[in-house]
Length: 109
Image (tube, rainbow, N blue to C red; front, top):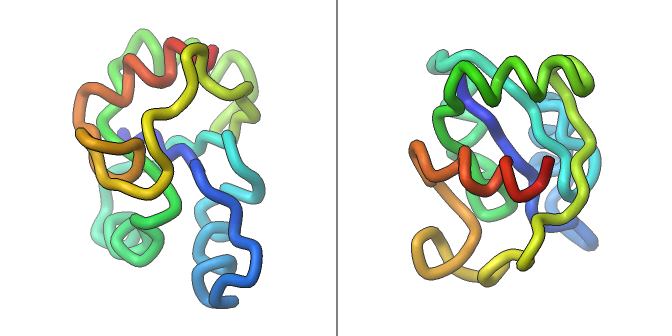
């Protein structure tokens, strides 16, 4: 199961990017969506990788997030903030995090 978190807003962005974010259920910044690992979801993530961060969420945190609001969850900004919204992980906050997405989500819950 992937957890996808929208980091950046899309002011003056391509409409196709905004549509893809909406299809993923990420309407605003600091929203989290849980999706299965399918080729379709991977393709959508690849298209919007400059606006989101994602990774595999563990079962315990997945249950916590689903209890909080289902598959699409509104979260506050993380404590201690993001690193940078311009660079890919590990230098910044965007892109694939793998298991480290759990650390970010725990700071946001």
